Image 1 (cartoon, rainbow, N blue to C red):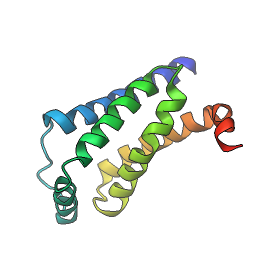
Image 2: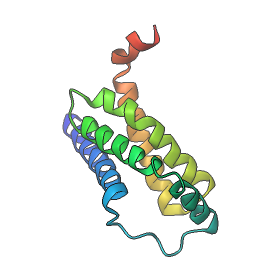
Image 3: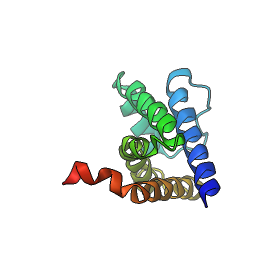
Length: 126
C-alpha cells in the first residue's frame, strides 16, 4: 500500500507540475472541441493577467510538495482550492466524460491524502 500511495502521489504531483508549467510556457494545445461556455470562461480568465501565473505557481509548488512524503500534507492543502475549481469547472462549464472522470479521480486522491494526514491538521482547527 505504501508503494501504491507513493506512485499515485508522484503521478498526481507531476500532473499538477505539468499543468503549472503550461501556464507559463503554453506547450499543451487547447482542445478543438471545447464548448462555448468553456471558451468564454477561459477568455474571461485571460483578461486578468495575474491569475494564470498565480494558479501556475500554486500548481507547481503544490505538486512538488505533494510528491514528497514529508511535505505531502501541506501540498494537499495548497492544491485543494485548485482541485475544487477544476472539479467545479468540469461539472458545470465543461461536463465532458473524460475530463470529469480525471478531475474526480484527482479529487479523490487529494481527499484521501487529506484524510490520511488529518492528525497533522488538528493544530489548525483546534
